Structure formats: structure tokens, C-alpha cells
Length: 169
Image (cartoon, rainbow, N blue to C red; front, side):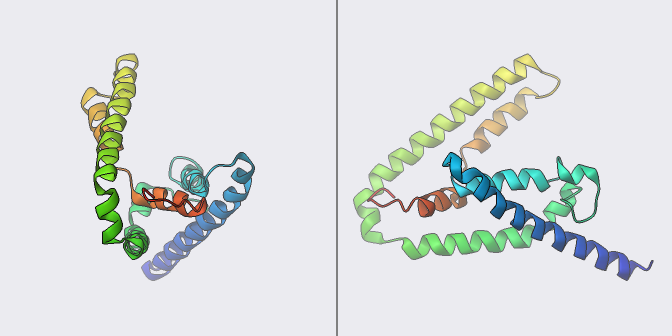
């Protein structure tokens, strides 16, 4: 098999995996709907399913991503998706609204970030003391800090799904 055929086969397997991710995501929204969970939860679960630590471990081409390198190769796709999300947020952004709720939103944002960091740090440091060989203390502290940096995509999806309205939204 030539290197061109291998490259084509790898591209086809990647496309199949992305298609499978979309299909599983859509199917999971239907499965989780009776539980009144946001659709973004279904997309997260489907991402875990096709990732390199679940179905990808089986090593079947097209049935999930076998390695983290395969996932990282989709960086352009995720950047484009985040660009669309940022565009949607910017389209709904109004300076007058920010002037009205800016102080309240800032306080809530800071409190949420600090509270999230403290809670995740506490849980992970506790886990470190239970299993120090699995989770080193520096990693636990860093993961706690990273936990406060939530992506806007999930929040925007939940707000849109539930058609939330109001000054803070």
C-alpha cells in the first residue's frame, strides 16, 4: 500500500469518526431528553464515547479516535466551531445591556470562578491524599484553576435550548 493510499484511508477514517460523533451526539440528545438534561450534556457524553479512552481503545478504524493525536488533528474544526459561537454571542451583545447589568455580571462571574476553583481544588486535593500515586498535588491545584475557565459554548447552548430571557442572560 502506498503512502498516498494510507493517507486517504486515514482521512476517510477521520471523516467516519467525525460523522459517527455527530450521529451519536444527535441520538444521545433524544436519549437524555426524558431526563430533562441539556443537549450539551448529550454532546459531552458522545465525545467521551468516541474518544481515545472508550471506543477508540478498540482500535477499529472509523469507530472513534484511537489516539489523542487524531483528536488534536481536528483543531481547525474546533477553532471554526468556536468562531461561530463567538460570532453568535457577539451578534446578541448590546452595549446598553452591558451598562445595565455589567456590575452584576462581573460580580457573579468572579464569584463563580473563585467558588469553582475552591470546590474543584478541595475535591482534587482530597483525591490526592487518598491516591497520591494517581494524582500529584501540583496537578490537582492546576486542574482546580483550569476548572474555572469554562467555555462559553456550553453556556450558550443551554441558554438557547431553554430560551432563557432576562437582563442577566
